[in-house]
Amino acid sequence: MIKPNCFNACILVLLATSVLLAKNEPAIVMTWPADKPAIKLSFEKFRQTGAYAGQNTYVSDVTVKNLTEKQIPRASFTVYLMDKNKVRIGEGLLQVSDLESGQSAKILFQFNSVGVPASVALSAKKDMLGAKTIPLRIISVPAGAKLKVDGQEAGTTPVMVRLAVGNHQLDLAKEGYAPGGTPLEVTPDELPGGSITVELGGLSRDTVELRDGSVVLGDVISVSMTQVIVRVEGKEQIYDRNLVKKLLLVEREVIQSAPLVQSAPANSHP
Image (cartoon, rainbow, N blue to C red; front, top):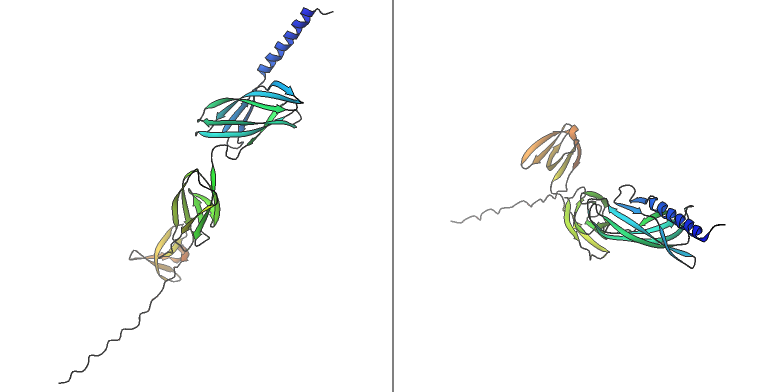
């Protein structure tokens, strides 16, 4: 027969052992996103703090670290809790703001669960890194111009793009027209559904594209089986026809003036 004092001592030993094991359990470590991690999350032991109507309340100390070289204004995750069979048994919201480069923050994460959590899964909010984007329709006159935003290909006009808050450079190019471009500032209070129109100017000179990738702008004087003659800034340049990949000739309007008829002077009478 176990004496009461001995029984109580055994319970204390078991509880102490459980606490020690809990402290020695490794944290659940996750990074987001998987390809280029920007945030590291370390979940410590899930601690049950209450139970009501079949649901258990748990808390965990979560350390969130910024792995990037820039400040993260805000980060927001929905955390899904799974049991040992990978069945979802609970969820909670985890948020952090103003996290400097390389900085870590410890957050008390609380959630309700209908079972014992064994693992977690993350779902990040679309604007979690603070990169708010505004949809903007880019239109060119004429249409069909290739668009670059900040030097990156962004489609053919008219096209809808999403631009982050800040300054951008739009560049458009269409064969047969002078390239166009404009700086653009997107403000935080910009409303979706806006548009911007860029008009391309017509080329006033012919374009000679060579096979090495270079482009010559001027006036094509003549094209023969062996050579192409181009007048550039008043000087004629001769290119081997085999070196020319493409010619783009602008439409020229030839204005023919009516011949000037000068009346003969009237005969003078003596």
